[in-house]
Image (spheres, rainbow, N blue to C red):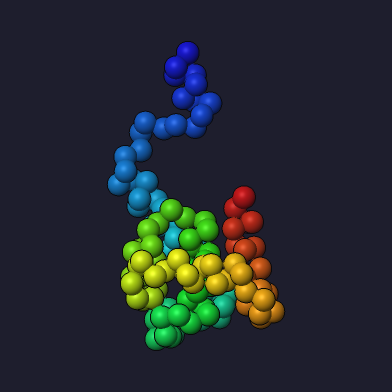
Length: 116
């Protein structure tokens, strides 16, 4: 009975913490690369932008909403400064009234709909 409940709840005993973390990092990288294409940016160009640039905020928003990687991972990968300050960037994208940012956000949102 317990085995059946675990099956139905989707629990998998075969994945360790490291495997889950690596999977999440892989998914975050996939989203990052797709996001760069949509924003028409190279990774080199992205990393040269200021830490609070809209493009970085959009990518942080995308990764934060769809992956469980840490703020530290996102901050280091996108070179956005301190991890404890990272949460302000996705929030800014969620609450924006800027039409251009809203359009870009919606384009990025379509990446994840393809996999849902």
